[in-house]
Length: 120
Image 1 (cartoon, rainbow, N blue to C red):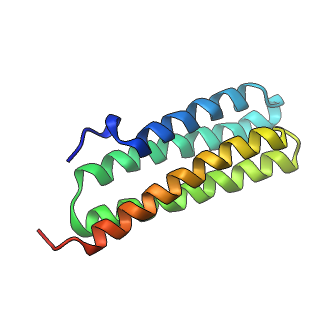
Image 2 (cartoon, rainbow, N blue to C red; image 1 turned 90 degrees about the vertical axis):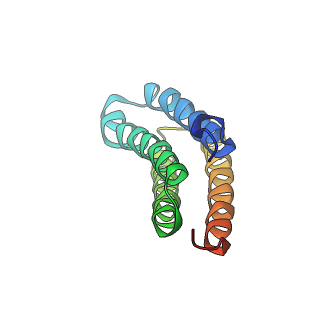
């Protein structure tokens, strides 16, 4: 088991969280409360799920990784809503979605590797 903070997927999640903090800070006040706060909570939950998956084994790990993938999709939906309401630019959206895509790819690989591993 690697130290969670050293995992590439965790580093990407930190990058996404830092971006979300900057995005939320520049949103109109009413949208910060509605979308910005929710986006930040999703980012923090993604980091927590990475930690939980890293320390878990077997079916528990798969469950955490599946939740991680779901939370990543929720973050993408929130980002899309932010663009639609003009709270963030298309360029900012593209930057954030590029990160969520990379998180999703790594989580999917982690899930496949975990599912293929023999039960301990």
